[in-house]
Each structure stands twice: as C-alpha cells, then as structure tokens.
Image (cartoon, rainbow, N blue to C red; front, side, top):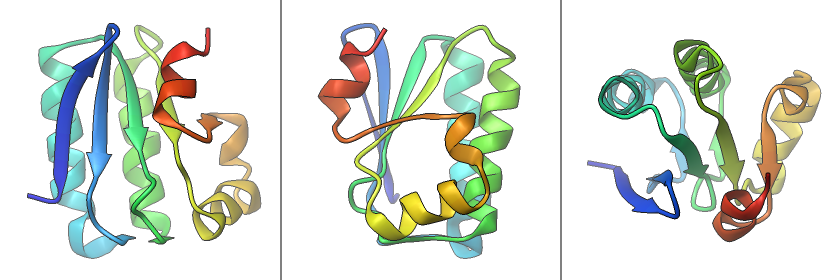
Length: 110
C-alpha cells in the first residue's frame, strides 16, 4: 500500500509514498484516511514529501478528510513539493490547511 501511518507526539502521521496523488490512488487514499479518522480523532499530519504531482482528486480527498474531522481535530500538511504547493496556492486551499516544510515543524506548530 502506498500509505504508511505512525503515531508521533499525539499526532497521527500519514505518509504518502507515491510520486503522484491523483485519480489512480485517490479513492484508496480517501478510504485509508477515513478509516483512521473513524478510529482515532487525534490531530493528523500528512507527509507529502514524496508527492511530486497532485491533481484535483488528491486535493478533494484532503478537503473531504478535513470536513470529516468536523473541527474535532486538525489536519496539517508537511513537505509539500513546489508543484503541489502551487496547486494549493492556485486553488486557495492553502488558506484551509496549515502547510509546513517538515513533519517535525507540523507536529510542533500550535
């Protein structure tokens, strides 16, 4: 599976181990995230450092996960590469998500 999860400092860290977060894996990623959200409402950091390309389906999964959290917990993004950051800026989704350079910084951010 192209996703990995670990617990770190009261955060669930989800790593995406694919260069592309697009329609080909979006549904599996959504199921994976929702399963973890249903099991544990802790704050989540999604490590995007390996992802070089994201399309609207990948972005849609992140927005859906944020809605599913319903304000009970936070989702922070870490390690987004330039092309992925461009997508967040272009769609103004950078206003919805806290995007930090590293997982450590995302965990430490209050």
